[in-house]
Image 1 (cartoon, rainbow, N blue to C red):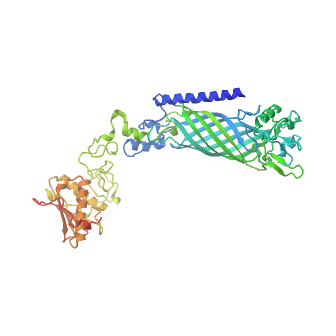
Image 2 (tube, rainbow, N blue to C red):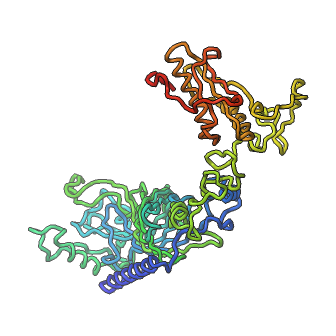
Image 3 (spheres, rainbow, N blue to C red):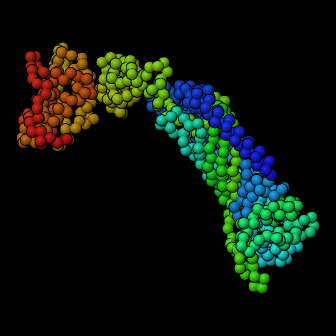
Length: 568
């Protein structure tokens, strides 16, 4: 047994050492465990190609999720049952009852955190009690009575064969990294549901004869020593006594039998666990995991009641616990996982979803960031510009695209019908809708050449507000287009309202809003405006605009008359 123990420990240490060496290679750049070229469209599945095209054309901010590999794995480890009989490890199990299992897994990532895994586990768990033996005549009678025992003292033991198939949700814990590219190990937790079968047997007979368990404690000091103090000697004597045939069927649920025979009990079960994977190569990883299974069953170890002693007259338990606790089992394992998939990236739990953002900002290809350039000179850097070839002098929005006031798909600088009603859309290449012109506009008057071609008008405001509405912005967009066409002309912006101090201040605020919009949003020089307010002849809730007369001058800004009364 000692040789097996040392062999197992040596193999385990060898695996950990090799994984540490591979992790060092990875840090030096010899192994690539994550990251990919986001412009490689061959990595994108068909149903996400539309998003990828919009991303590459700067029409969408986020790259499509790439196709990622499946993972298949094999594992070997120790099975232990937590029940009424003490479970044994591979180092102290009885001969013929090695508590070993193996597992097969298939795992697929659906995001950088969440993945699902299908797992099959098959193995054997075993154990026996070293405590004071129990008289089995009122409890746990099934297998002992079957073997011919009546009121003899016995030592509970078992060997159970377990098979489990479960579907699990797995959550990665450490692949979202803000200060390193990616983790060298992947930590995870899991939870799932499934079904299991078990078949438990007991070593109750030595050939055809019953065991004489009364010899186990002969010669032991039981006066001032507890069973715990004598456990090593008791364990040794029991192992020497048993023939390790496990010939007797343990108690089982007759009404739950299924599959191969009526003694194979089926149960629905739940699983939880945690583990770590260590990258060995681009395709291979080492896995160390501990998984617990809840069974809702008290006969996995073949024993319904915890051991103790009973009064031989009354049958009452006078020592030990007469308890019924549900049996659960545990699978601690070491395994190897292999990534499978053609044109795919590594499973997403190995990748840092922040890779693209950091690489784009700090280490772009070619050594120069697009965020430092503005090829079309529209004031929006190339890495955010969704319309990278905007002609010079055209006003753009925050995405670098020309304004399209009526939303007909034709930018304002090309639109020959700046405000096309929705019912008249779609429009032609010039932005002209399908609705016929009204009779009054079929023969429009010829505009005069000069500054008088800049239209006059009035924009309205909500009561007590100086905020521009969308219709007011549309009017001002038209005014801005006229002023660009006549760069030597000025416009007079006049605010109405002179009744009270508050009304005068509001008149000033509204003129200031109009001029600020023309300067900040439309790019018109502030010196081309004449600032007037407090006009008493117009609508107090509006601001008028017109072309400046020849030689007409005035300030482009004036101090507010009553700033303490200003309201938005």
